[in-house]
Amino acid sequence: MGVLAAESDERWRHAIRSIVLAGQEAGEFAPLDADDFTITLAGLLDGLAVQIALEDSEVLPQRAYELAMRFAAGQLQFGGSGPTGSGVAPGGRVSPQANRVDGKPAPAPPRARKRGR
Image (tube, rainbow, N blue to C red; front, side, top):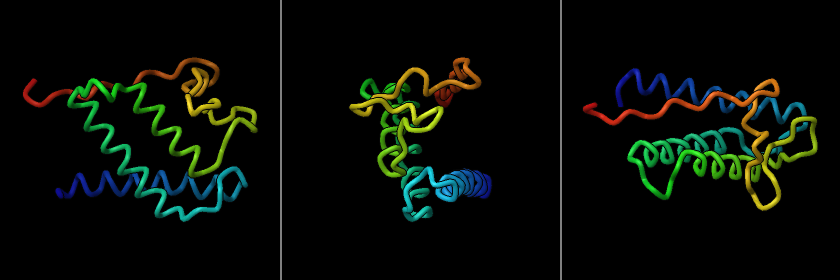
């Protein structure tokens, strides 16, 4: 792995781990192993990102988002009990409100570009 990729992965995993630890300290997340969760979530997101970049018809961006949110909510055991909730509705579907920032829809993530374009 190249140095830049390794540094990027390290920053990404550090960010996830920090959020998990902060949520655990606040009593909002389950007391799971933050390192194991971080590696698992990062791997899941990497795999889903590859499928989106390859334009897999089974893994559209919204579905990938919903699957990742469902996994995180299940593992961290967070739900709609707080003022903003997890955004994961019964049945594991992500509510439209989950993708909002300050009451406004969050900007869509940039689309992955195919190599050679």
